[in-house]
Image (cartoon, rainbow, N blue to C red; front, side, top):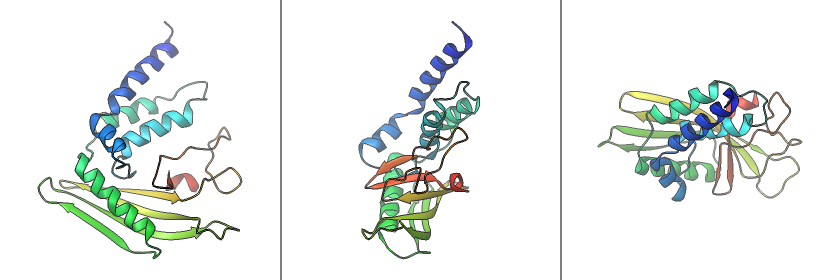
Length: 186
């Protein structure tokens, strides 16, 4: 078995393991806020973005191991974070913050909408919203930046592309929104 096949098999096994029961439960219950599920969604998204590459990067393995062993929120906290994210995205005001806290597990989350960009030539309320998501677990706070769009981005209206010219798929989709890592937009 050559190295590429072995690496692909190892990658697949690790990816299946990374999709932990907590993530799967969150997925089945619509608790897919990207900040609350970042490591797992980032690993899946990286695999999706690079699957057409001739050679797979070792970064894929790093992302998978990070999703397996990185501290992420428990199921109820993921749902709570997703709930405030939906509330923030559906409120038309920019620069407002929404928070939740679980004192028992010493976790908290915050979502702050930075700016709203309407889709050009659209009168249907189609927008993209840039926001920051803060996740606190014990004494560590992680900050993630995302763009959420309530319409499908295409190559001609601002979708991020990789070095090969392929459109980068969103991290996740739910509740009529597509979520992208904000740093992909330069």
